[in-house]
Length: 220
Image (tube, rainbow, N blue to C red; front, side):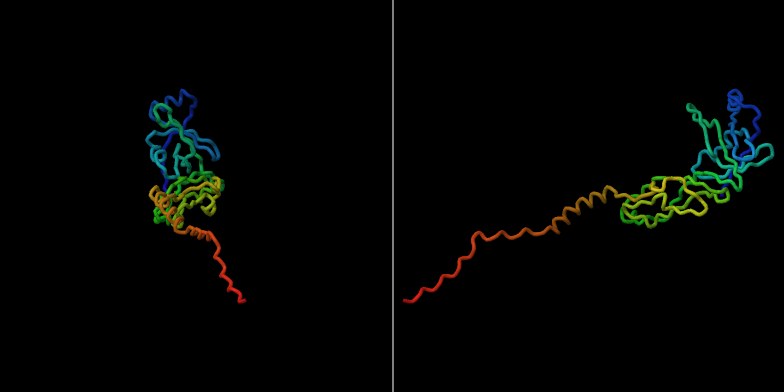
């Protein structure tokens, strides 16, 4: 799995005044928690670019005072006016301690329903999982080859080893829907099919019954 390295400096002062001073120097305050102790640090804003502005899931090696902490990104804060990064939270990975992470989905294959003229609709781009650090991966692959027209792949259809999926199992993550053209074609075909298969009307009953044959005249 891809990892990114960030070099930071230990923060000894806290509070609004100290954080304002850091930001004025284009430094972003951050914290590392989940390990033996909480580490408060700061690093240049540019150092976070590869983990903030990407949909990929990456491990981050944060180096502070000569010690490297293996982490995953947990939270980001931005200035509401300038949209600049103002704070970063990392979770330190401990070998025997499970973590919760959000892993992106990677869809593979060509859906059968798309080949039939449907449109692929992606409902979810990631799943939240709970697992040990050693089982973390860049993404979760989902094969959509057998996804039929009007069909769905749901969270419960994704099977993962060593991972517990925390999302609701019935939520759809991908589906193939009818395109406008197919809907129009179906609307045209159905009335024609109904007319062709309709039961013919019964022949009207005869207005009058046939007259019986006349009896021969009797001889005198």
